[in-house]
Length: 173
Ligand SMILES: Nc1ncnc2c1ncn2[C@@H]1O[C@H](COP(=O)(O)OP(=O)(O)O)[C@@H](O)[C@H]1O
Ligand SMILES: O=C(O)C1=C[C@@H](OP(=O)(O)O)[C@@H](O)[C@H](O)C1
Ligand SMILES: [Mg+2]
Image (cartoon, rainbow, N blue to C red; front, side, top):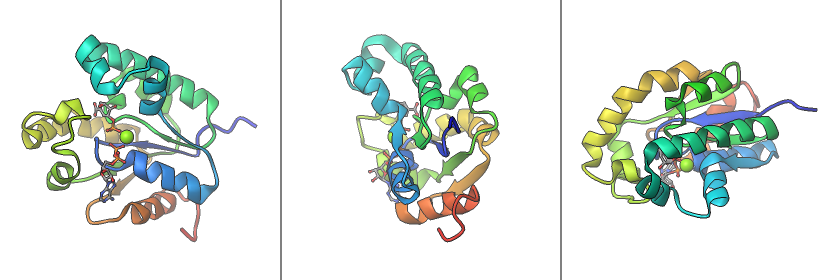
């Protein structure tokens, strides 16, 4: 059967897509996949190196292909990179799918990833960068999402439960 992904997670970096995605997969007894990890494996280099060596535009092209491949071949939980929704082709691929947008406020974002250099877009002045990034992206996350789940003051386990409930996947979550 080719049912497509059970859950697709979008949202800004640090919102917990990868952490919550793995937990969701466990709870659903389904495989987990992360397009960032797919790109790193295919390229044999870290995402920060792809940004530095080839630029963001090149990374977005790799990401678009990775999302298309993952959506075509995966029936479990899929976490996307935070900027995947910037690409119109990627957004079109997400239409009609069970997409959850994991949201959080700026304080939480800075606490979680502010000084994490593996996330190149927040490496300098994380608070301002995050605000600018969200101004450009918030409407795109909302546009592709079937459900919006806030992650502020919630553990990853609580977020996973909220996603299941919001997408109506498991009543007892
Ligand atoms: N609900 C949460 N509460 C506190 N910390 C979290 C939560 N979700 C994720 N984190 C932490 O935030 C960081 C980023 O999480 P990650 O899952 O990699 O986010 P994303 O994939 O959305 O960038 C990790 O250190 C993770 O442990
Ligand atoms: O927001 C972004 O543009 C990015 C988010 C990262 O993924 P996470 O959201 O999983 O951190 C990763 O794809 C890359 O560093 C770019
Ligand atoms: Mg991630």
